[in-house]
Image (tube, rainbow, N blue to C red; front, side, top):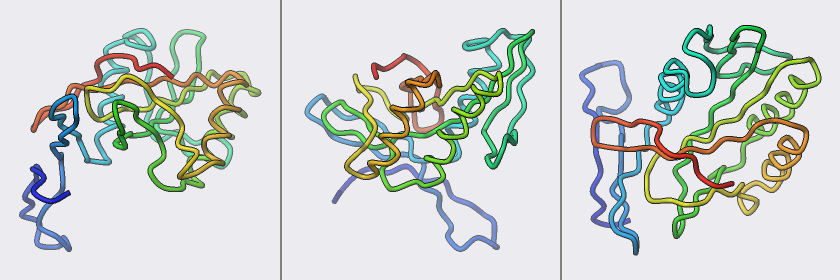
Length: 185
């Protein structure tokens, strides 16, 4: 988009290929200008902080990052009393007229994660996929069948099997991002 306002992080690491990281982009919509966080590393950190606050489990829950199950490595494994759950996080930046969708490109890895989350259920664990919408000003989430029909179909199937699909928007500023409200799916 020509003349888009972007937010960059300047790195002083001489071993990097580029000097800058793209952090956010201002997107002009018919509903006004929204700030979209573009940092692909942020959703996991944001969910980690959110989980520690006791938003999905108790504040006493033990939260482990990068937990292996079967042939997948999920973003989190949570133990909370008798509850044991695997949590996978997906960042969402694709928006059109207030509707966000995932993925923005084919993701075989995403399909594998959804199938393995369903296997977690069969093995007595709870299973969650959390879509972190890296912006405000949206009202609905849809799986993106146009970009990857297999992912969209697998998400619907996983949900029907009992994988909990959660979608939250975020408050985004040039230097922060925080989970805010649940979005319809």
